[in-house]
Image (tube, rainbow, N blue to C red):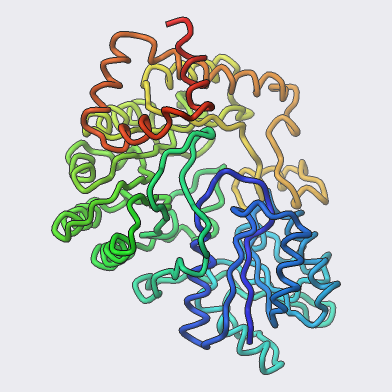
Length: 470
């Protein structure tokens, strides 16, 4: 058969390859040998009509698409038009939102034939066997489908042996130039890609659906398997790579072995990763920096112990401060992120979080207004309290929609703007300038970012606006 896998149509500057679809494509080719076409509508910024036209041109037997809560409505509009124009094409849906709303989707959107919940590398080839044979897929793990008016569901699927999966075939993506952008400023300039070295999360932060999607099971690839892929990418000319793991530093010994193998094999890439503040000891970060890990991201979320408890973050502001200090001491660029607007959070606590972020003086910050997303403990709590409407599961909801008396949209957006403003203020000092110069000396990615943005008007505008009063 011919199988087309696509990301939803959208507008974005987040130019990261769709690794999930590439893993699925590899499994289909390995298990069945079907022709597979991958269309990254998300990063190509395709409209709904443009994506539908592309699908019609390809005329696949099966179309699969992933979706998040943010892209759900665009996904449904796309697939409905595909069904109208290609009534013989079987439509399969996956991704986070489909996993947590499978029953509701199948009941309301009759053009969706099957949903695979969780990780689909094993399930999708088996489903294709059933589609080709015209048989019922009741034995496919993670499957949801209609049997008449009844919705049949199996528990979501989780892959245990990640080393058994083939490396993603990035050639399926064509010549689209991928990259990493932060606040609209490019952070990568060479041949760029992403890699996943582990899946899942053992924690249960209340704003995040990752734990539910992985059943709180963290599953790592072996260090050798990861470095084999990095070596392949290096030989293919890739020089910059983001590790998309939610918990890359979860097991220090695995990271240390990975770093040793990277050095031994002469792999010289600029690597970006996300770490948890509780797993950010200075010796480990120095080891990572020596292997090319130049940028690290920490989810700090708040400076308030009460808010961190509400988020079930199991982290303290002191530990975050230590992690940032250790990363900077190791010579890494550090990005920290924060969430504002928890119903238990006062405006004074939000301002305290902004001040805390300013005191840490990371090299980048990200501020988010709290979202209530299906699949998260916060969403489940709102549902139990009867605060979630019948249609609310279809879209993303910001905290001010449910608690406007606590903080209005205008107030939260103003606080977010203040957060970005004070981030720049933190560097307007002699110590800040010395810190920046030191980082430039020891971190090749920092030098590359500065040199690569010398003629970037947007980057220059951000810096000059921030330093105008310096």
